[in-house]
Image 1 (cartoon, rainbow, N blue to C red):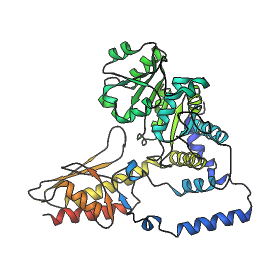
Image 2 (image 1 turned 135 degrees about the horizontal axis):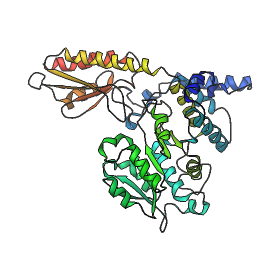
Image 3 (image 1 turned 180 degrees about the horizontal axis):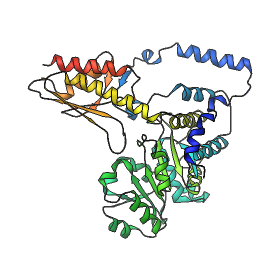
Length: 406
């Protein structure tokens, strides 16, 4: 296995996929450039009557996730200019990602939800092409997936959609008792780590004791960058990440990492193969290239510098809000998932006579529109999905809205 430190240092020497072009017909390049240039001159969202906004909320699918760096969109644009065999591309990119992340194998998926579905399908069917065509009919198979009650969320439907049956447990003792000849997989939700009694190492140990494959859902668990290595090193057989969150890749892409045999089995359910339950979970060549470049960029980033930027941005907004009498703020970092500097703003409504819902509405409907999170008593803000400089606009608008209510 390649030494991770040496590998990370060498990433700058790796060519971005956008540079794989080689020598192409000049006329074709000019044609593509002209087409793209024309498209960039159009304000498509305005044409469609849609408002854009400053994202002070985070990487929500409803808010279209993240903004991709130019290098990623360049790779996507390059992918649109040539034909390539899809399986060959996934093979080569999977090997490259596995090398970058020091794991056995990897594949680009249709988001983390897609990663969960094809991983589960792969475990259910193994390498049996007859079983592949049977899903979601798993009657008589080993088709149970064990989940801690505190980890049960709606996204577990990614597992049941392909024919798995969820078995809920609370304790390690219940987990051991639930394992039987019908147990196919054990699934862990990293975002809800604190809601379950069984933590990572014990979870993996129990599964290995009974030779049961494990999957950990890390959809929103980048940053920190160490999570890209941590869970495969810990012994989880499969790890899923969203591509369009902290990695800043395509919103409809994701990563499935881990043991080669399970990921190869998962690939049996994906395009270009037809008659499979994963046929609709297509990842095109443009997204595959975009995801690879997004990962290369992320690994090569100055993470300490980026963290300091986020801290400074949050502090600026916090200080602006605190300048209004009666306002209190809390700067915090979620322990798992969306692990970035975040801000909660609350106030004494006897002094600042506006509800949190109304303040958030004014932010959303003002100019420019600013999307936040929160509840009936707070405004919640993150800055990691903002374009640098937008934090000043947000700070100014928060102060204006709260001050005008005093």
